[in-house]
Length: 156
Picture (cartoon, rainbow, N blue to C red):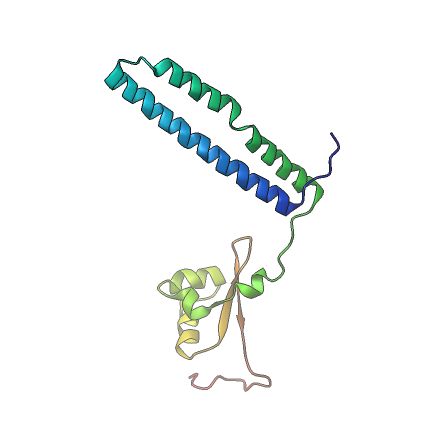
Protein backbone atom coordinates (compact mmCIF):
# COMPACT_ATOMS: atom_id res chain seq x y z
CA UNK A 1 0.00 0.00 0.00
CA UNK A 2 1.47 3.34 -1.06
CA UNK A 3 -0.79 5.77 0.75
CA UNK A 4 0.81 9.06 1.77
CA UNK A 5 2.14 9.26 5.27
CA UNK A 6 0.03 11.23 7.72
CA UNK A 7 1.35 14.49 9.08
CA UNK A 8 2.89 14.49 12.54
CA UNK A 9 -0.28 16.08 13.94
CA UNK A 10 -2.53 13.48 12.27
CA UNK A 11 -0.34 10.64 13.50
CA UNK A 12 -0.30 12.07 17.02
CA UNK A 13 -4.09 12.39 17.02
CA UNK A 14 -4.45 8.80 15.81
CA UNK A 15 -1.96 7.59 18.40
CA UNK A 16 -3.86 9.42 21.14
CA UNK A 17 -7.12 7.84 19.99
CA UNK A 18 -5.56 4.37 19.85
CA UNK A 19 -3.99 4.73 23.29
CA UNK A 20 -7.29 5.87 24.78
CA UNK A 21 -9.00 2.88 23.13
CA UNK A 22 -6.30 0.57 24.53
CA UNK A 23 -6.80 2.13 27.96
CA UNK A 24 -10.52 1.38 27.74
CA UNK A 25 -9.79 -2.22 26.73
CA UNK A 26 -7.41 -2.66 29.66
CA UNK A 27 -10.03 -1.28 32.05
CA UNK A 28 -12.58 -3.70 30.60
CA UNK A 29 -10.10 -6.56 31.00
CA UNK A 30 -9.64 -5.59 34.64
CA UNK A 31 -13.42 -5.44 35.16
CA UNK A 32 -13.80 -8.86 33.54
CA UNK A 33 -11.09 -10.30 35.79
CA UNK A 34 -12.95 -8.94 38.81
CA UNK A 35 -16.23 -10.35 37.48
CA UNK A 36 -14.65 -13.79 36.99
CA UNK A 37 -13.27 -13.67 40.52
CA UNK A 38 -16.65 -12.62 41.96
CA UNK A 39 -18.41 -15.29 39.90
CA UNK A 40 -16.16 -17.93 41.42
CA UNK A 41 -16.74 -16.59 44.94
CA UNK A 42 -20.50 -16.13 44.77
CA UNK A 43 -21.79 -18.20 41.86
CA UNK A 44 -19.50 -21.21 41.79
CA UNK A 45 -17.91 -20.06 38.52
CA UNK A 46 -21.00 -20.68 36.38
CA UNK A 47 -20.35 -17.60 34.18
CA UNK A 48 -16.57 -17.73 34.28
CA UNK A 49 -16.24 -19.49 30.92
CA UNK A 50 -18.32 -16.90 29.07
CA UNK A 51 -16.49 -14.04 30.79
CA UNK A 52 -13.13 -15.60 29.92
CA UNK A 53 -14.20 -15.88 26.26
CA UNK A 54 -15.13 -12.20 26.30
CA UNK A 55 -11.74 -11.34 27.82
CA UNK A 56 -10.03 -13.41 25.10
CA UNK A 57 -12.01 -11.57 22.42
CA UNK A 58 -10.90 -8.19 23.78
CA UNK A 59 -7.27 -9.24 23.95
CA UNK A 60 -7.35 -10.65 20.40
CA UNK A 61 -8.94 -7.61 18.79
CA UNK A 62 -8.10 -4.64 20.94
CA UNK A 63 -4.54 -3.60 20.20
CA UNK A 64 -4.25 -3.68 16.41
CA UNK A 65 -4.82 0.07 16.21
CA UNK A 66 -2.04 0.72 18.69
CA UNK A 67 0.39 -1.28 16.57
CA UNK A 68 -0.76 0.65 13.50
CA UNK A 69 -0.18 3.99 15.25
CA UNK A 70 3.31 2.85 16.30
CA UNK A 71 4.07 1.90 12.69
CA UNK A 72 2.90 5.33 11.52
CA UNK A 73 5.31 7.02 13.93
CA UNK A 74 8.14 4.77 12.74
CA UNK A 75 7.44 5.76 9.14
CA UNK A 76 7.25 9.44 10.04
CA UNK A 77 10.55 9.16 11.88
CA UNK A 78 12.18 7.79 8.75
CA UNK A 79 10.71 10.36 6.39
CA UNK A 80 10.75 13.64 8.34
CA UNK A 81 13.62 14.77 10.52
CA UNK A 82 12.51 15.73 13.99
CA UNK A 83 11.99 19.47 14.30
CA UNK A 84 14.82 21.22 16.05
CA UNK A 85 13.84 23.77 18.65
CA UNK A 86 16.46 26.49 18.42
CA UNK A 87 14.60 28.52 21.03
CA UNK A 88 15.02 25.80 23.68
CA UNK A 89 18.23 27.06 25.14
CA UNK A 90 17.14 30.71 25.15
CA UNK A 91 13.89 29.88 26.92
CA UNK A 92 15.46 27.53 29.43
CA UNK A 93 17.73 30.09 31.07
CA UNK A 94 17.66 29.75 34.84
CA UNK A 95 18.96 32.51 37.12
CA UNK A 96 22.12 31.31 38.89
CA UNK A 97 20.60 32.05 42.30
CA UNK A 98 17.69 29.71 41.51
CA UNK A 99 19.89 27.07 39.86
CA UNK A 100 22.22 26.88 42.87
CA UNK A 101 19.63 27.29 45.65
CA UNK A 102 20.39 24.72 48.32
CA UNK A 103 22.98 22.97 46.14
CA UNK A 104 25.85 25.37 45.50
CA UNK A 105 28.50 22.65 45.64
CA UNK A 106 26.70 20.50 43.02
CA UNK A 107 25.94 23.56 40.87
CA UNK A 108 29.61 24.51 40.97
CA UNK A 109 30.61 21.03 39.81
CA UNK A 110 28.06 21.15 36.99
CA UNK A 111 29.45 24.49 35.82
CA UNK A 112 33.11 23.61 36.32
CA UNK A 113 33.81 26.31 38.91
CA UNK A 114 34.50 26.47 42.65
CA UNK A 115 31.62 26.73 45.10
CA UNK A 116 33.07 30.01 46.38
CA UNK A 117 32.66 31.55 42.90
CA UNK A 118 28.96 30.64 42.93
CA UNK A 119 28.52 32.03 46.42
CA UNK A 120 30.27 35.31 45.62
CA UNK A 121 28.44 35.83 42.33
CA UNK A 122 25.10 35.43 44.10
CA UNK A 123 26.17 37.58 47.06
CA UNK A 124 27.20 40.56 44.92
CA UNK A 125 24.16 40.26 42.66
CA UNK A 126 25.79 39.38 39.35
CA UNK A 127 23.24 38.70 36.60
CA UNK A 128 24.16 35.16 35.56
CA UNK A 129 21.90 32.67 33.84
CA UNK A 130 22.41 28.92 33.54
CA UNK A 131 21.35 27.10 30.38
CA UNK A 132 20.73 23.34 30.45
CA UNK A 133 21.67 21.44 27.29
CA UNK A 134 20.14 18.29 25.82
CA UNK A 135 23.29 16.30 26.62
CA UNK A 136 22.93 17.05 30.36
CA UNK A 137 25.63 19.71 30.49
CA UNK A 138 25.19 23.32 31.60
CA UNK A 139 26.66 26.66 30.62
CA UNK A 140 26.45 29.94 32.48
CA UNK A 141 26.20 33.33 30.81
CA UNK A 142 26.60 36.68 32.49
CA UNK A 143 24.66 39.75 31.40
CA UNK A 144 26.69 42.94 31.81
CA UNK A 145 26.22 46.51 30.72
CA UNK A 146 28.34 47.70 27.81
CA UNK A 147 30.69 49.37 28.24
CA UNK A 148 31.33 48.05 31.68
CA UNK A 149 33.86 48.78 34.35
CA UNK A 150 36.43 46.10 35.10
CA UNK A 151 35.01 45.44 38.57
CA UNK A 152 31.47 45.05 39.73
CA UNK A 153 30.11 47.50 42.24
CA UNK A 154 30.31 45.94 45.66
CA UNK A 155 32.98 43.39 44.73
CA UNK A 156 35.87 43.37 47.10
